[in-house]
Length: 235
Image 1: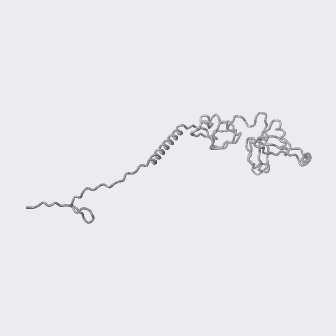
Image 2: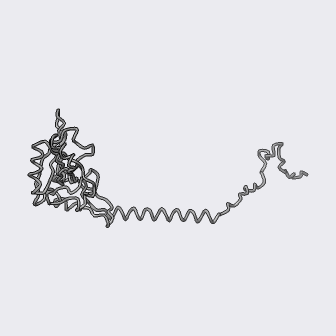
């Protein structure tokens, strides 16, 4: 009579059950739960909210862009503004900024620059004028200046100057003795040319009153006129 013998699995030396013998249940590895930090969560939410607000502002700015007139070339004071001097750009414009709108470009073409216009800047309505720099009751006196008579400071349209009468040598000695101050005429630069090749002479158009124009022209003809820059406040 045979007896059924029960077989039990015996582990090998490595601890792994021998092949062909069923192994017992293996417990899953224990994983420690990650601790949630409230401060980190709050910071993450704040960053997400800030990013969303930034995107919203950007979308609003993109959606409210205005086409404005820009300056693309140098334009001197008194120079007539042409269409080639201007361009257009679409920007998010603050309501406090006064700029010529793109559809109003034709209204400024043909006017004169009231100030010096620089490329890359927005064009404001106050920067152009329909008036000439030579006003009613004024005269324009051209004055040729030798290189040593040209100020180191650039002469620009609108700059205030004084025309000084420098008498001849003999008369100058007499004036020094009598302490007589030189005669002067107030003027305003309308245009200054570049130095002429070879001679270096610069021609400056100066606006004076109608009464002083002939006197200044006579000083120029006699070679007794000198031009000096006036103080910024005109005094």
